Image 1 (cartoon, one colour):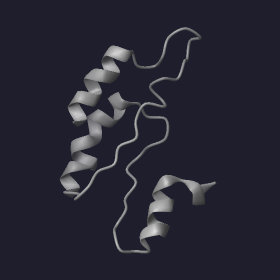
Image 2 (cartoon, one colour; image 1 turned 180 degrees about the vertical axis):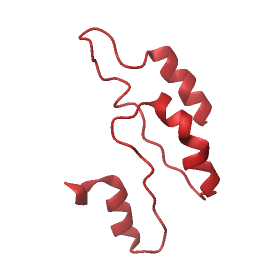
Image 3 (spheres, rainbow, N blue to C red; image 1 turned 135 degrees about the vertical axis):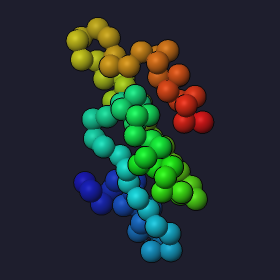
Amino acid sequence: PTSEKWVNLMKNVERGQIQVKNAGIGGQTTEDAKLRFEQDILKQKPTYVLIMFGTNDAAILDGKHPRVTKKRFKENLIYFV
């Protein structure tokens, strides 16, 4: 349920004391996020950034291979650090 999504839980716990923005786009991989990270996140000059990636990268689409290889996933994570 929407009320149990982590962004909404944070908003409820902090009761308006912090501003929480969710820049996630359902279905995107780390490679998709990497392309828009500077524009969608860094240009907003956030104090803190919480990142949750990996679920869509691991999706097996052809029955054999993940959408993003382990090597590419690690390369993308280095970009965000």
